[in-house]
Structure formats: structure tokens, C-alpha cells
Image (cartoon, rainbow, N blue to C red; front, top):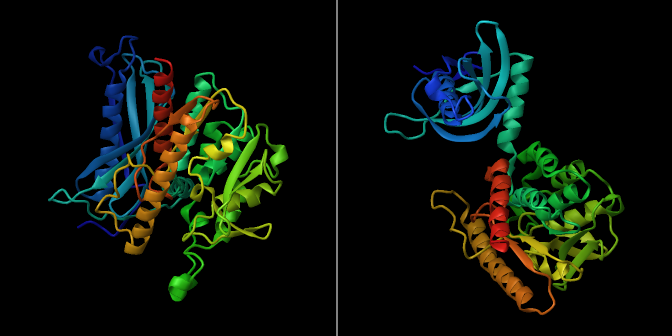
Length: 415
């Protein structure tokens, strides 16, 4: 009988094998495909041991190659279950290479894998709770929990897009951002690399951002919003590498919407002078979820309500090329999966907002391309799905997707 919980020290795995000649690549080192097989097998040992039954691979979050492994070396994969959900298990695999004759041993690879326990009908089934007992285990558990809770918002695709642009010799000289894209742009404009911005987002926990306003359950349709804005504002403050627009290394313009007039508001470079944190609080105040943010006697809200991709603001600045990263609503996006249990009212609100924003973006793009004298537009469209306004996919997936989409756009620009 499977117990209700298991100690972390129990949920481990280890496999070893010599690297034989048939396993080498053209450079004489262990072929990456063979390495992935070993990693998957080692992770399976830990997963099956913890679940007390069969488990299958759900995803490989990442596989970092630190050093090559030569033919003849003994390769050992150590796997540990670091965090569990209802049926899923987050597993870290550390890979070492050893020259048996000399005893020289080096760390060569790190992988993070997710397994899911299944029953006899191959359906996901519940796994035992994971109990960290030592300080080192508790630290691993907390790090894994933060990775899982820090599911990336769609705006994280901007980071991958900027990586691709910089790699192509097109480092941005100005940022114009709205909503979470403005938060990303703030970090980049402050001089952080895309990787450094990602790591800051990676440490954010869901409860640091999405704190339910329990009075909303009582007030019903009379509530101001579903979430309390204070935790989100504190999180924004902690994320910011600088305190003022004037501290940024690259000019940044943040857009928001005036809910009373419908006007597009701009803050920072070329716009109103307001505290940086206030500008970000305004542009991220998405109605229904967050209440309007009071700024200069106005009710301000998410800039995407007026301009999902802020081309209207970008048109105010001279440029040789404008790269627009579109992670908002679009008619090319699939509908929300039928299995997702979104409350009916929230889903209806989201679908209606989706249609309006998709139309907004299509018209804004068409207007830009039809207006004489506008700079060439590099349109970067990562894959996005409905129902993912906040946090459903892993941050690293969105970063990689943004880079993929940017590379496609760059290739089309320079065939």
C-alpha cells in the first residue's frame, strides 16, 4: 500500500554506465540523445520509487550542458524528487563523469524533469506528499516550489525576443511597454540582461501577486475587483532594479488607459513625469482582476485596453525599425481547452475581452503599415492561448517561444 507521505531521502534514483564507442558523436563525446535517455531513466527511478507505481515523463524543463563526457568515462546520473503536486513530481538530475582509473570526477550536466504518476488505466493518480527533513532538503524543496509557482506570464516572451534581437545586432535603443510588457521593459531598460530579468520573475510566488479579495465574494457584482492590489504593488517594487525613470539606461515609455475619457496615457520618456512604480501599477491594473489605479486624479487601468501592442505611442518617436512583440489576444490563437475549469463568468469576460483586443491589434497593425513614412515594422508573434492571462505555462517556455518567434520574423526580414 502506498503511504500518504515519503521523506525526500527515500525518493531518489541513480544509474551508471560506461560511455561506449557506439554512443559517441562526431567529436568523440557522449551523444546528446544518449544523455537524454540516461537522464530520463534516472528520473524515472526516483519518480516510480516515490509514487509507488508507474510514472511517465511529462516534460523536460531544461537540460544544461556544462562539460562534454568522453568515450570511456563512467557516467552517473543522480535523481531527486524535489517537489510534488497532486500527481506530478518535479525531479532534478545531476550528471557526473568519472575516469575510473584515476578517480577524477566532474559535474557535467543538470536537468529538470517532470513526471506524472498514472494508474492501471493510465490516468493521472495522486502521489504521496514529500517531506523534507534536513536544511539542504528544505532549501531544495523551496527552490522547486518557487520554480513551480513562478509560472511565467505570456509577457516573458519579450525576453526571448530581445535575446534574438540582440543576437542579430539589433539591440533596442528605446522601449515602449504596456501591462506586464512594461514590467519586462523596465528591467531591460535598467540594464539587466534578459536572463537576469527572467531570474527575478522566476522567484515570484503566485501568492505574492494574486491575493484574492475575500470581500469580493460577499459584495458580488458590487466588488471593485477580484484581487487585492497591495501584494502585487509590493511585488512590483521588489522587482524594480531602479526607483525612477531617470535612473534607466535606455529611454522607456509606459502606457495606460484613462477609464473616464478612454484616452491613451503615456508616462516616462515623452510622457508625463510620475513615479515609476505608479506608472507600472497603472498599466497593470487589468479590470475585473485589479481595481483602477488612482493617478493624478484619474482612474487609470491596463494600457492594453486602449492599445494592446502600443504602436500608437511608439509612432511618436523616430526609428529606423520598430520591433513589436505581440503576446496579446489574436484571431490566430486557439480557444481555451475544454478541460480547463475556468469560472463561467470569468471565461465569458475573457472571451469578450479577447475579441475586442484582437480587433484592436489587427487594426493598429494595419494602420501602421498603411501610414506613409512609418518605420519598418518587425512583427513578432509568439504562440499564445486563451485563458493564460496570468500564469499557466512555465516561464522558460515563454522565453524560448519569444526567441523562436523573433528568429522567424528576422529570417523573413532577411531572406
